[in-house]
Image (cartoon, rainbow, N blue to C red; front, side, top):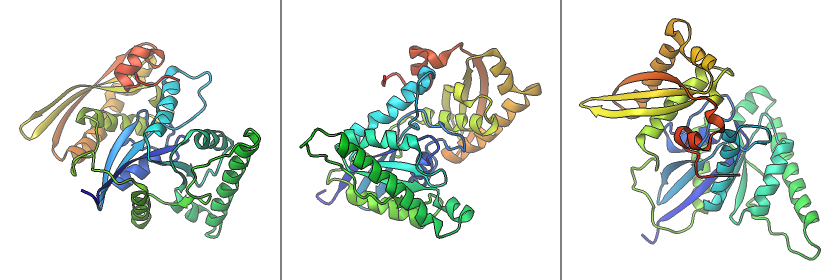
Length: 327
């Protein structure tokens, strides 16, 4: 037990920075919803990742974004992301290497450095895309650009401090880690780096645990993923999944779930002409569920209208599990 290490690693960053993709790659399985569209993740999702004698507890989070004028759903998602910083032993701030460091990153990163009492590291993701879309040498230029912006944030913190006060910045390196979640070697290196930062501690979960979330939550997320993939920009942000029934019957798992929307015309969009869209969503979701559960699945989907659920505290708790965090 003396050689055991265990700690929490918060994955923070703007929407679509690659947080869920990186966590899934480290776990070797899909736990968090992944799509090309931003703001896919709505909750804090724990992923248990054993690495040698170390148990890394990844905390995937919703993308941090400005919430002024947006529904309570967005406000609580962002508050949820910030809330995990206090639980972490290490914070990884992710930046999409293709988009580069944005003005909002400076705002959020400054807040992170000013409030975090644990080490922070910047991780530049999607480097594989950078190398295919940009000349090879420019990958290092991406790192240099991020490095320069990080230096600027630190300078701002120093200049705004009370005269004579010491500014403590818990930054492991001003140079970002460059990583592609699609490259096994990069993932192994990242896991090893994170493992080295974890404190000596007994493991908090069993060796075969994947998450602290119930199976119904994970299955609901896999169904919601298909809404993002198949409905484009039309609907996903105002839709939720509620698993109404989850039952194992012999070799078959029966799942009944409701797609919750907040407008009547959204219901028609989900169902599609002659039910074609909901059938397609259900088929793709069933295949994903069977792969995850490793057993046959019978899936039934229903579509329900719940007016303005994205602005209701009670309904956000029921449909999105966001009752805990307030801005």
